[in-house]
Image 1 (cartoon, rainbow, N blue to C red):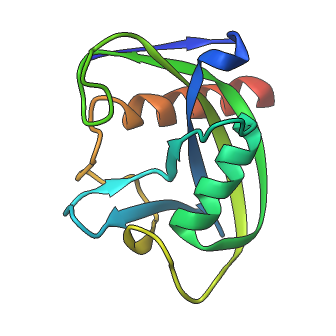
Image 2: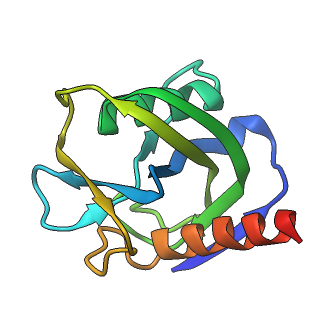
Length: 146
């Protein structure tokens, strides 16, 4: 599994939005109803949907976020077969960061629950991808503060 980062690519290549999120200083993760692992909110871009709208929609659906700020971090790509890519070809997505101020009381999605962590979890749904996305986000933040 190979994860790469880009400043930008042609918009039509962007198939996914992944949103690294925090709330009150804690990492926000989702637990899917069918898995015993944790994942960052995100998902597939729908037909004719702007990628920024994909990010907002997925964040709201998967976490119940109702009051948040969100901003793009960078483009990423994943090459290799995984749960959402059976060809193994390079697929592109946009990585975002969101600060969630308020959650809805109920989730109406495939997610069982939202969990707030002080530290990053060890039971990842996508262990070869999502830790690298968070690492990239953390590098971006530390570089912008320098």
